[in-house]
Each structure stands twice: as structure tokens, then as C-alpha cells.
Image 1 (cartoon, rainbow, N blue to C red):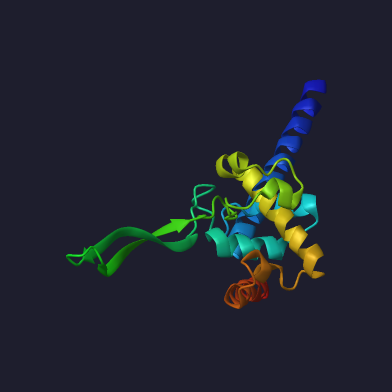
Image 2 (cartoon, rainbow, N blue to C red; image 1 turned 60 degrees about the vertical axis):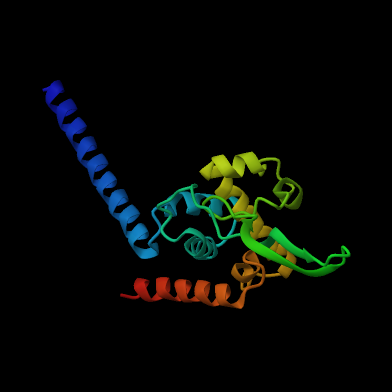
Length: 194
């Protein structure tokens, strides 16, 4: 009789654990479905650890790398600069310069890197006062890239005294970026109301 109760107890525990796992998986899938972010749980964990609103992190992550399907392998547009490629000059017989023509090619510099698209031309260790935010770490580690991106959001919150315009400031003060982040947050709210 003792083995019967033990077996019954173990079956009950297994059923409860299976039910919890199914509920957690459904919740996980529903959060991914709501946000469209494959890495929503990692982003949320960083937001929680640094006390940053989930929706701010999610909106910026969506703007920077959409679903997150590339992980930390994203490379941003950076800044387009003109570089003098060749110069053509013509001289007269006395050695006087008659004309000069320069041709240019365009090159991208400071291309943002990783999941939260951090600019490699910024000294993030100094800016964020966080030794974890070295260029090497934000390039190679998804976790460090997200951590430093969320720390940057918190820095912008402190600088600008509120969360409202953090998305804009994350992208250099872009009104278009802010508007798109607000549309994404509004979309989340409407999906939740279904």
C-alpha cells in the first residue's frame, strides 16, 4: 500500500509540473506573439534588472533590430561620408594649374553593432560608467550588447528627466524614430485589448 501512495504522489507531481510547463510555454509564446520579438524574455530580464519599463525596451529593440532574428549579428547604417578618391588636374605649358577635378566615393563609418545597435565610435565604458560595455564585448556578446543598450536607455531617462522621449534620444533626437516607437507601443496596447 505504501508504494501505491508514493506512485500516486509522484504522478500528481508530474501532472502539476506538466501543467505548469504548458502554462509557461503558452505565456512565453503569447508574449512573443504580442511583441513580435523572438528575444522578448531576454530583453525583459534586462529591463527588470535595470528597472527600465518593458515597453520602452521592447519599442527600441523593435526599432533597432525588428524581431531580433539576427541576434547580435546586426550592423547598422552608420554615417555616410565622402572620401576623395582621385584628383584630375590639368596644367598649362608654364606649369600653371588650369583645372582640378576630384572624384569622391562614399563610405559608411561608425556602423552600429549588435542587437541594440550601439555606435562603435562612442566610448561606452566612459559614457555609461560600466566596465562591461567595451567595444569587444558589445560586438561579440548579445547579453552585453543588450545590457549596455538598456543602461544607455536609463542614462537617457536621467538626462532628460523621464521615459517619454527616451526612444527619440536613443536615436539622436529623431522625431521620426520617436513616432515609430510610439506606434509600436500603441500597437501592443491594441493587441492586448483583443
